[in-house]
Image (cartoon, rainbow, N blue to C red; front, top):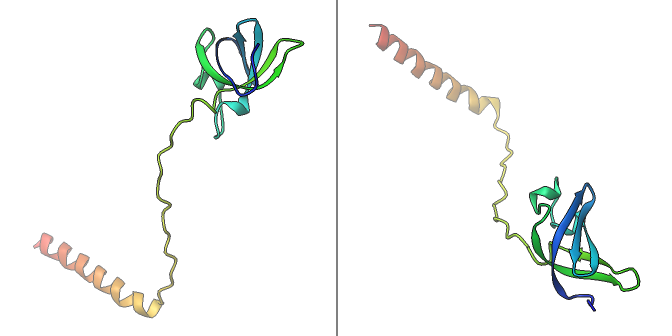
Length: 118
């Protein structure tokens, strides 16, 4: 007799767009697509394949019909890589301050061209 919250081992028997079916002893189980990851799941085949033996957590048990609701993500949590959020500096520089900088850059480019042509 399987109880809610137990860790079980099962074999993937079928994969559909909404979940994967699992055979756990005499029970038939379903891992809903939302129980594969905390993040967006594009394809279940990225996580399991048919015939694979997997370790799962039991979310719910229907003893009468011998059915299980199972979770893959509660056992197989992937540790993500933390990244820094880029800081964007939005500022305004007046045209009065930018014109001299632009002119200096253009003069330097012009002097380089002249020295190359000599």
